[in-house]
Length: 402
Image (cartoon, rainbow, N blue to C red; front, side, top):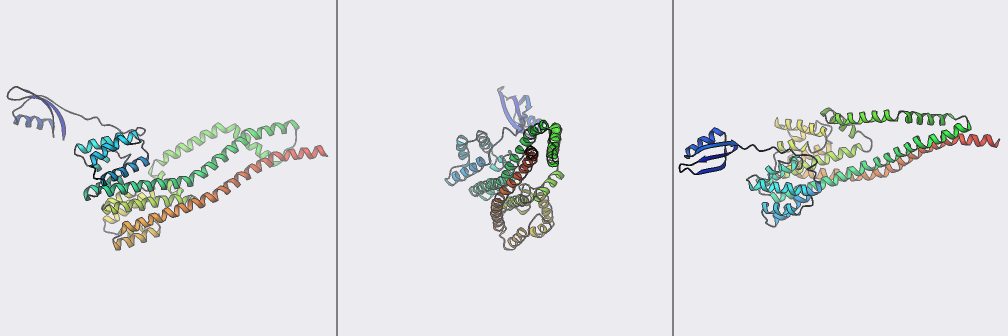
């Protein structure tokens, strides 16, 4: 239905200016004539499409989780949804979120449901959130839906922290490693080379190799930096394609030590999301449509889509899932048990908790193993460079003593 602004006169000659909805301008004019109105002018009101800008809608996941937790608390206190949204819009810690809450309230007052209003902000509210809220609206369990969403987002944040702690520490050590090598290559080695040239001492092979490497890096540093920039930008662009995502996701889970952590993280997301959707009473096909995309892995996403097609054909989820190696046997067996007992949500929750515990344990092991390994590696490299630089000094000292 389009909205029109019109100006007309009635049979008494009184002016009427109003806004009305109609399928078309002709339909509006015909309707007004039946009411004995003479249409002077009419035009369609074209609403401006507001494009959401990434930087203007930057809301932390913690704020969204707290928003749903507060909504659940207010509903439990029998405060109407619109009043709850009005109160929350004035107390939020995030101004962009407060603005969104106000817009949600305005949409609901115009007749939209909360799930329909949330769907207008796909960058903020995932399909899982929208589907869970919709199921809560239809089942009259909106408070439970809000509690589930808040708990899910808190678990997601905790899982993200686990993965970040697993990857951040090696990156810090690697960064220190690169800085140390840069200092040695561009500052320390040239100083020693000047000293060696002044004394005219014959350099050992190891020292020559270290100095030659320093010369190569020093002379070609701009070109190497440019090549690195091209490689990184090319990798980023390739990662935005399906084949690129598939390649990097495959390589990521094959990394030694860190690979299993990435895989467990994706599987935990998958199982937890699947569990919430099923417990919310959402149909299996709709669950499979949503759950793959929130796992963060295109391998799981593509496998889930093929599983969904198999289920449409009349197969079981567990039977279809068995065909894909990305899903461990544990998930397949637990799903098979859930299908037989009617407790798929409970089984998936158990699997998700198992992967969470396993992920935490592996992060601790990884941190305890990587720290000494990387420090030893750094010490070996620095030690070799120091030995290479001091060998000529020892040779000069021996010659002077003789």
